[in-house]
Amino acid sequence: MQAYHRVARRFNDAFATAGLTAHQFGVLVQLSVQPGVSQAALARAILVTPQSVGPLLAQMTDVGLIRRSAPVVRGAASSVELTDRGRRTLVEVYPAVGAVNEPAALGLTPAEAAELNRLLHRVLTHLDEPAR
Image (tube, rainbow, N blue to C red; front, side, top):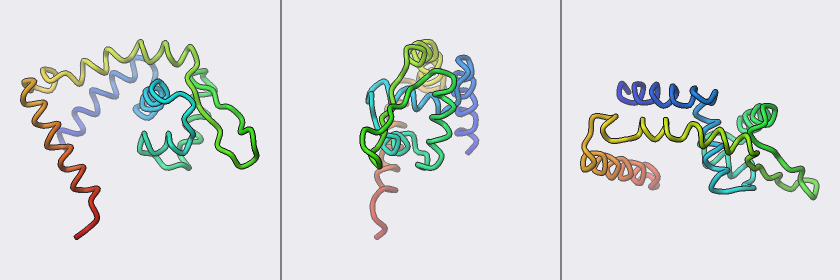
């Protein structure tokens, strides 16, 4: 928990340089690799509930970072995409976020960072397996 909070604080500081939250940064990243993704898929990708992604996207729409298309058919999912401002914001903040994620910034060698990453993926895989 201590390591998580200290690393999260550094990431949050990096996001704040562009006036973003962690979830907003996640939205921008996901939309940069999956333009037009649905709100439900976006919620799953950034690990928030479908109920909470709506207000998040509304706020990001209001400040011009993203745009949402209206569903073509009633009941169909609307898609979400980056605006030019959203792309510029992502380009602006990405180097600061990358710097926080560098092994040296975490006190690790590249080999240690790779091993930590491997072990954390093992934990995630184990936690995703059905209970035995």
